[in-house]
Image (cartoon, rainbow, N blue to C red):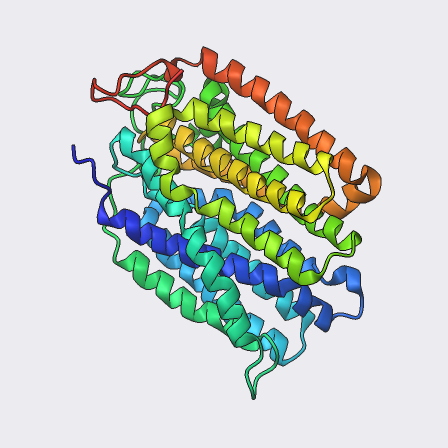
Length: 435
């Protein structure tokens, strides 16, 4: 089998770049526009909160729709809420409507819930050794987003004849068309089996070993093969549980410390431009390593990359405890971004590795992304509360404790899961998982 990634992988890279560009723009705009449309400052982040909420609520339905109609049609449909988000956001700003702004961000969240599956779609039909490279490349779309998002927001923020930020939201409609065209060009590869027609089945009872002999992730049990079967697959596979835990907790800790770091720097009276520069370096550190994370996984194995990611998260908190100097805080944010990348890409690659092309793969991916969105939402809403309750040092100590617990769980889970047995690169099998 070819060692080159198919052309579709690069299309998914572009699609993910569009997805993350909308996310970066919304981070820059949401609170500012919200504050301008409501007299109560505490309500200013409500639209952004609804965006996270809709990502969380729509993730599992998105995975089920993909299973029923296929990846490509679902991605094409997802362009609609993005386009509507742009129209609603433009009208919200133009008419000073806070309610419409909430609708705009809710629609954006619905689109993001679908678009987040780009990294898994890129692995469909690939040889196991190529899956980590494909995921890594797609996640690297964040590098383009880190450049395009702020550039678009800055250029479109104040245009004569339009309300501030109105054209920033209108740009979502153009990005929706671009996303539609990119996904239209994708030749959908054979992926996890779709749901059968009513009353149908995929043979065998739930939990029966699949073609690869891996019990608990194979077999489709007809009407019983929805979320319940996906949960049972996760319960029966320690490696799947570890993959979900690594991605979700890594995402939550990253969001928590990133937002709280900006609040902490502001409390130290650091200039806003300095805070912005620190966050920008953090975003680059999150996504730039994805150009070679897949190669690192191929050489060192998934276990090493995942453990390394957790240790980097711990290191970031240790750096925060050592000093409040600007240079140290920037270094911590860079290390935090690297840790997120290794846990996010490593967890996603482990999930893809264990699931293969099993019938419940898309639903398990939906559970995984639901866990990510729940933890990301918590990480976005808790920073101010924890900073007030535990303080900067207390929050970092708590994060270290969570990471140590995750490290122990990952070690125990991957050690006893049969899917994590050593696999020889030379034997033509997947080299991505090593003890």
